[in-house]
Length: 431
Image (cartoon, rainbow, N blue to C red):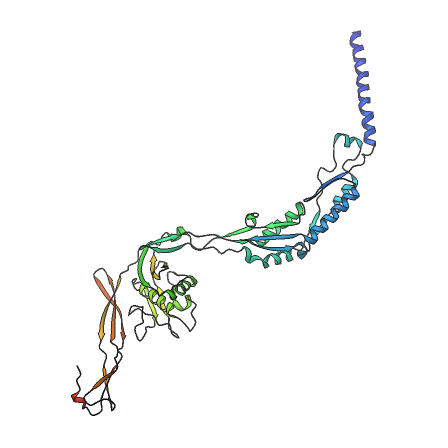
């Protein structure tokens, strides 16, 4: 029993001594201020070591001022570069909280310094302010750098079939997202350059989807009519340009097509437009549900265009037709470097269509006689050879049934024969 009491006594004495040995130095260290500290600054391009708070403050002030004066948002797109200086959108950097914490020091006393307990676990960041409206205006100025219009999937003719060329997504800069991104970059740690590009900042771009996708066009497998031809070398490029610049080659269900409107024609035109309009005209005739509402024929047949299908585009000339079906239709074309071209009307299967055929009836030119005193008696001379006229009847053949669609008449040109002035008209050989 006695031994147990002695043990407790000495245990208490030793514990008190240990507590005093720990508490007294700790208390003293808690009362002592922290030793003088130095500051290291790791800048983006330089490293500063063992700076006093005053020196560190001056370095940061100079650094932030330089960022404001010479910093910029760098816009990169397709090899082109543009800069939006920070000063343009009134960037301001307030680092007063950082400077306050620098002078206060990292540790409250010598004990915290000894155990590494910092009162700056959450190091303050500079306060950033900028003029968002001016930043948006500056970015809009260079918007065209980043806008890539989507490319629709398209159909091309290839050996009597249609082939799909896949669509290409477009892209555009989202101005609001770009402003938010720039703010975050500056707030996380001001830097001299913030690069905006599709590869470095894809999250601030909006994907633009094309109107037609390959999946949608895959339904257009039926060829309803085709027309082929060959262009002279000097007409190939103009012909291609007309097709590329036409305001869409789709003919929606219930829509009326006007060649003059689609091709943006003025009063003046050239042979390439006439060839193309005539080809489109013949192509759509194969489908009964396409109703031609206006077509101005020519008085005479036009070279390189099959008689009966030419479209006269002079003055108010035009080609108009209505897609009275329930299906969308597309005009598809192919132009080779050699000048050979082909245009087809394609759509989803299901429409009735036929083959376009023609019947030609020649019209002999009438003869006009005139007397000429300069000619010898009993002689004659052809002054104008004249030209045969032509009647063209156009038919649509579906199965075994042929329907005449219309008749074009090209009037003949008079043949003029001069005769000797003393020859009687009844004696003239008219063979």
